[in-house]
Image (cartoon, rainbow, N blue to C red):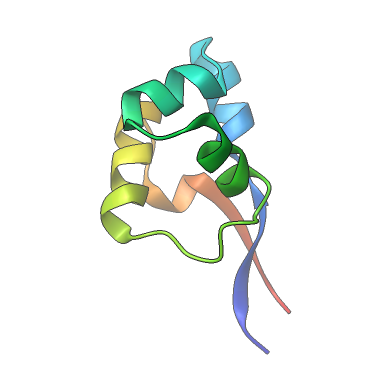
Amino acid sequence: MEYVPVRCRIPELLDRIGKNQQWLADKMNLPKQRISDIVNLRANNITIQRAALLAYHLDCSVDDLWKWGWR
């Protein structure tokens, strides 16, 4: 078994601050498709630096970005 992200919380974190994925993509200097891939767990991995920057823009901790579970 491994501990893996089972759900991305970025959409609810964006809702909390009244922003959308395009806003986040612009802040991160990434294509919106890349944000969509992260949100839909299609991105197999992202760097800790990118996760930290996501958390910074969403005003949360890196741990808050995903719900984790055992598989």
